[in-house]
Structures are given as C-alpha cells and as structure tokens.
Length: 345
Image (tube, rainbow, N blue to C red; front, side, top):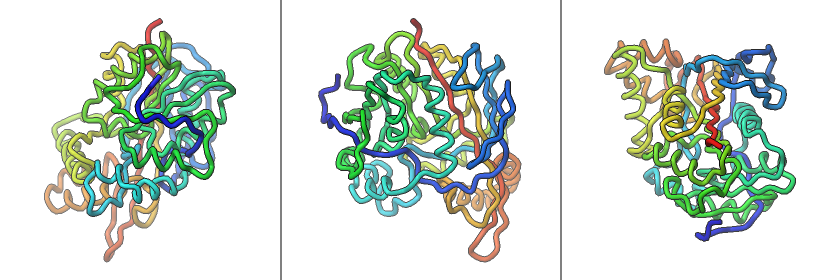
C-alpha cells in the first residue's frame, strides 16, 4: 500500500459541481429505456456479452460524438490563480467540495458504478479523487472493500479528510497519477472521473493504472468527449477549443474523443470490452449549470468575430447561441464517454 501522506478515512462526496438543465432522451443498444433526471441519449457498445446491472451490451464499434466538458477538478472560478495553484488553494478546495451534484453528474456516476461491476469487497483506486466526491455514492456499494483516493493537490485531500460527514471505506494518498505510490497488482478496480483531459501525460497515467491493477482488474474512464474531426475545419475547431480552455486549465489540457480514449487504453495493453457514449442536451438562457460553459461560450464568441466558418461548425457540432445584450440563449448537447478497460488475466 501507499506510504505517502495517507489519510485513512471516510469522508467526501461525489465528483462534480455543475447544476444540470439537461434534457433529451436515453436509449441503449440492446434495450429501450427511459431515463429521468436527467434524460440523455446513450449509445452503449460492448465488445463482449456482459450484463452490467441489467443492461445488455451488443457488439459494435463505438463512435464518439457530441461535446465535451471539463472536469475532475475543473472550475470556471479561479480568477487570480493559475490552474495548478487553484487546486492547492484551501479556499478553492472548500468551494469545490461544497458544490452539489447535478442530475447529469448523478447519472454519469451511476453509469460509472455499473461499469465497475462490483461485488462489494473490492479494493478500488479513485484516481484524481479531489475532495472525494465520487467516492461517496461508490462507498455505499461496498461491504468489506475499500476506496483509495489519490491526488497531488494536498488542499483537495485536506478538505476531504476533514469532511464533517465522512465516507465509509475511504482513505487517501498523495501522489501523481503517472507515478502512483502503490505496489504492482494492488487494486481490483480503478476509475478516473472527469479528469483524463487534465493529464499532460495520459499514456503514462493509463499505463500506471494497468500496473497497479490485479490481473482481470477493471479501469473505468468517465470523461467529456469532443466530436471526431472529419475534416480540416473540425481539426481547426478542436485546436481553438483546447486553446481557450488552456488559458484557465493549463497547457496539459486536451479534450479527447471516444476513439482516442479507446486507443489510449488499447495501446497500454487493456482489452476494451465496453464503450458507452451519453449525450445531454440543454436549451436555456446563459451557461449557468453547464460545466465549463463560460469557456465554451467564450470560444464561440471569439470564433464569431475571428473565424465565421469555425463558428458555424461549432453551432453544428456542439451548440447554438443567440446574444442579446450581455446575455445569450444557448441550445445544444454535450457528450461523455464511459469506457471500460480490462487488464489481461
């Protein structure tokens, strides 16, 4: 087990700090189902026959589509602090922890827990745990297992460690995602939620997770995804979106596509049996409640002035906006991938 800055402890709650306004409908390949609060359109592609809490996967190639949002620890309110400094700032960490779960994040957390296929006694790695907000609902599924949350931001870990409502079966360890402080074959399961796009060395991260997993262990990635680039205009739009987000989130920030996450896992040595892509739609005044929505609108307005062709593609791929005074009405959808990698036996 880890020996660095470890807090054996119980406290925190589920990751995410957006407040939904999510609309749409959900269906999964292999069955028709209605999702409520939020409603999402889902494509669940499994490359093996598996039952994950009642959901049957069929064999198809996954295709990412839609629109990404940033986050494990990503925020729109770090004025005066650079990306890394914010996560090491106690006030920022407390603010992060105080934000509740949106319907969308609750839904995605449920999909994550389903994909982990838990029996209750597993040792689980929570990568980029932050204040431990995903660990809370996950801990309720454990009987004798444990969750170990890893983060390099001590302020985040400190807030989680001193939480007034501790999480059961949860402990923390300070460490870097691409240099994990654990022995080979320590964990039965691992996950990273809303943080893969923040890692400057994602290949190193997924390789380290593979190392610390036991044979046949599962690694589940939940992350916002962007549209697959189909031409030069899409590629230019992707570059602009990442450029805007890096101003706040640092040079290592990069949105992935569903297929790029699958390739990342496959190259590291995982088998990728399941990919679930969910799209959440919105139609509202302003970007309140939309994860990192301010940055998306910032990119859109810049494109409207600087590159009309890219602005039109933004509207086609992600969302439309209609400005009136200091406000804007936005309508579109955002997509997320829940992807499972399995370590060979």
